[in-house]
Length: 113
Image (cartoon, rainbow, N blue to C red; front, side, top):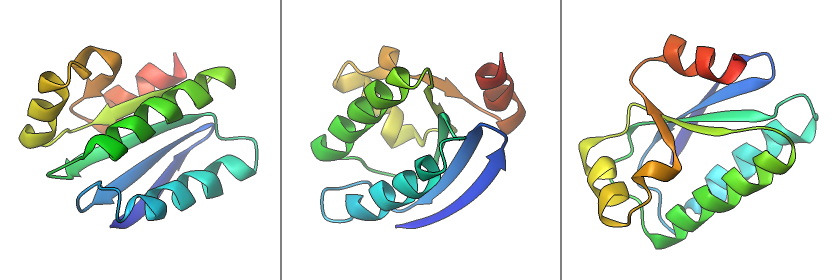
């Protein structure tokens, strides 16, 4: 999984590329931990445009991350979810658990509100 980061004050966008499966979830976890270390980042937007698949471990991590950030008064938002990802979120009934945005300004505005 390749990850690039865009910073927007207390929020970051992690642009992900590759499947979000148990085998490579460690890369995402490391990137998230690195962002949360400094204490300033409380909101994370995951750009899923190039993530064609997520397994149950990846879904579980998203829920854990959402809970962890809410304890810090932060949020997890999803950006540009791939059609396959949307279908997986629908089938697992997790679609309503996350706000999904189509463009960066919209997602950043929602977090900064």
